[in-house]
Length: 193
Ligand SMILES: C[S@@+](CC[C@H](N)C(=O)[O-])C[C@H]1O[C@@H](n2cnc3c(N)ncnc32)[C@H](O)[C@@H]1O
Image 1 (cartoon, rainbow, N blue to C red):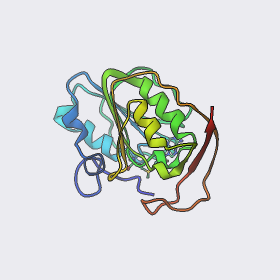
Image 2: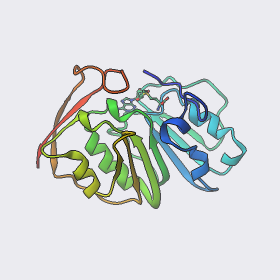
Image 3: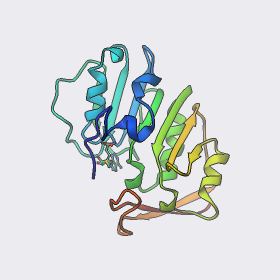
Image 4: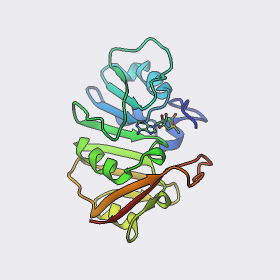
């Protein structure tokens, strides 16, 4: 599992997201990165002069962050994103190759949508093949307002909102093998609500 992506470069957030997160943020903004891994990208971002007035938060299940002097605006939290509740709204929410390992992916996507500011933006990697639900799930995501880039397997949303998917979460299976990244992933099962 690649938990070490930096902010820019070959193995980086800029490459996976298609943009450097710091270019999408202005003074006073808040950036939340879910499943942040070692936190390397966030630590690099927080050390950039452009991040001086930003609030940067990373959340990961594993409390194994890169040891570094942390800037005042950086918070790295060990928690399960499925149950963690944020203390504020965010201008940017990212999840770089983290949704693959979450059980209730649609439940988390709905929660994320409610954590965005009115003009906030969410971007993440998502493999719809790993969501087993009645009907085409990408259509349901688009109906809810998400954009889905099929070629890049990238999901995005602009603007916070309340979303209720017409599904009930049944459970997940972590024994279905690797997904397109080559890493073992978690398949999520839903039935019609
Ligand atoms: C492939 S790594 C990506 C890490 C980081 N985003 C990067 O690109 O370097 C996936 C990360 O998701 C985290 N993760 C998986 N399930 C999680 C959960 N339920 N809550 C929080 N983090 C989770 C793992 O601990 C791991 O660090």
